[in-house]
Image (cartoon, rainbow, N blue to C red):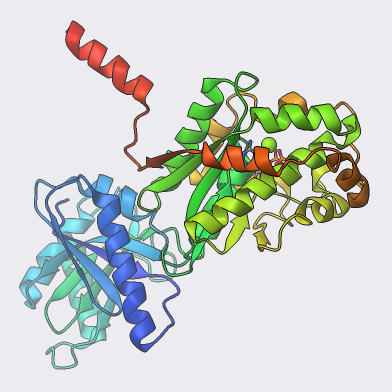
Length: 407
Ligand code: ATP
Ligand code: MG
């Protein structure tokens, strides 16, 4: 089937006036971003929906795959925009049904916003349904539970006709809700936390703590790949990679073994807090989940949180692990997250961390050394990479060049 437009329906755009305009503009630019570098389309967004006109050469399935990931998109349909002529509409509806299988059912669903159109909704349903049956003896009508619904919208400018509705990512357009810093480990949870917060329209930059040689280059590559997957839903994302080895070694020198985990998290938080201010963000986001592990009891969160007054958002706080895994699979981060590369915490994880850390105790341990200079050094030596959905690591690029040279 050839289509000439993609219809994009907006999500929760209940806002009015200037705000609505801002939302629509953001959504339009995010959709355009998602389509780079594809060719053969023009995007037209009006207040309640977006039409993307496509040329016959355009890869419409790939376009729809990408648009469906943009937050703020409720659903999309590939559509035919046709003349307001009954014969043309009959032919088009029949064309759609040619693809339906033996014994399958359909119904015609008409929306008529042009009240001047000479046929009313009921007449149109009957006429178009009749045409479909006449040309496609393999199908029958079922208005209650049809296998296919041929939607026909009679609008002022044209008739739009389609029979597929693809669910979008929902939520709000990224860029309408302020900026946060996502603490991104290589695990299952934090990438999902990032998706959830972006889904509410919030822009993210990501921060990752890297402790070479205790954590490998592979672990870093994994976080880069996770950032790339996050970037499929928005434009480019900045990833700040913090050299954390020195801090971690120092923690292990001065803090009681059972408290090193708590202290590590506190130092991460202190560094993240500085980066938050540098980049002009308003909150930190992490993948913490109540009760999952020793570091994620309420007492532990209290001790960790104590180093900052910046809001720490925890979108996964109350979810069950199973549900987080389902989300990770839906968002496409799961397969990357389960690759077995250690992150900096697993390596220094004590056998027996305190589950109910006393924050005064951890402050006493940390108090024997002034960490502030070391923390500043880590911040000063951050490596920042901007990652878009087409990002290739230097290593992959090198392999590619090598292959091209060989063949
Ligand atoms: P995840 O699957 O996100 O790693 P987790 O259940 O393994 O979560 P922890 O390892 O206790 O939980 O980490 C809690 C949160 O701290 C993570 O979700 C993440 O936001 C942050 N975090 C942990 N390690 C790092 C790291 N190396 N760099 C950046 N953030 C980290
Ligand atoms: Mg982890």
